Amino acid sequence: MSNMDFKMPMGAFIHLLAVIWISLEPRYEGLFVWMLPFLLMNAAGMLLVMVNKTKLGAIIFIVGCVPFVPVGMIGIFGAKKMLQGINEPVLNNA
Image (cartoon, rainbow, N blue to C red; front, side, top):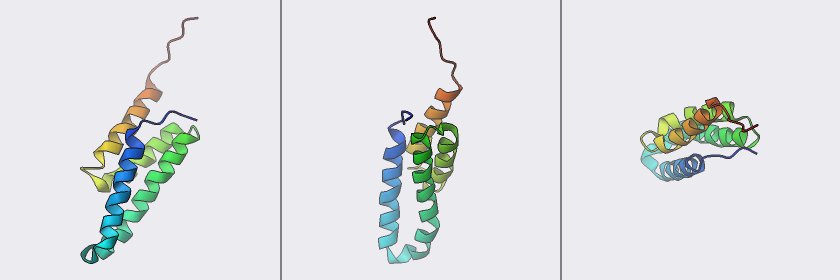
């Protein structure tokens, strides 16, 4: 199981709260239908990160965060940090 940056679940939780708020507002009834798939993308991205598909999961998570900007930036920063961790070489003291 890969170490997930804490900003990813925190961002997904904030997105969940936003979707719940949108679903309770009668004025934004149609917006709920458009926001729910992006929340599901966040969940799918986090699950992929948990099963060591880190690069794919982080990319899906970033795409799921886009409609939630500026709050979505929290999750984007967490996923970007995970992607940078993949690209950095591991130093071994062998």
